[in-house]
Amino acid sequence: MTADSSALDPEDRKIVTLARSARARNGVPEGAAVRDETGRTYVAGTVALDSLKLSALQTAVAMAVASGAKSLEAAAVVTEAETASDEDRAVVRDLGGAQTPVLVAGPDGTVRTTVTAG
Image 1 (tube, one colour):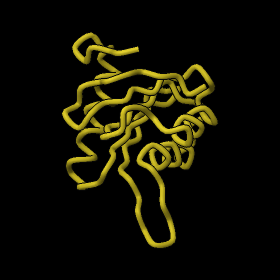
Image 2 (tube, rainbow, N blue to C red):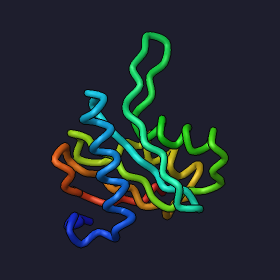
Image 3 (cartoon, rainbow, N blue to C red):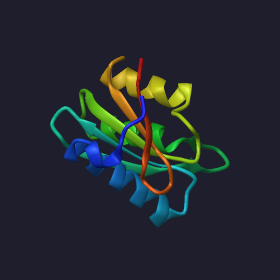
Image 4 (cartoon, rainbow, N blue to C red):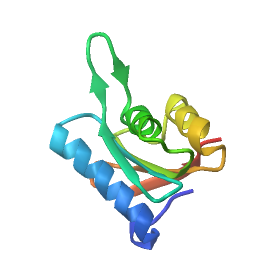
């Protein structure tokens, strides 16, 4: 499903903007943001160390878990890729469930598609 960014819920638009900002600010391939069941957001970029490789979405979900989140309402990733990877969808599903929406936006912040974590 393709989504018009201007038609997004304000809270979804916020996580896309946060993800885009993380990508730009940190100069990383991807930026991501997730919103937990309380409305808190967690923002991250790609982690690429010799001994640790995490996508931006994996990092954002890990930050949410480490901060005590019990579930996710939504996730967003800003990437050159056309859609969220299977690994990224799996980590969102682990915390948020199969129906959690994952918004996939290009580097300009335009949402290309919304997929479910399932």
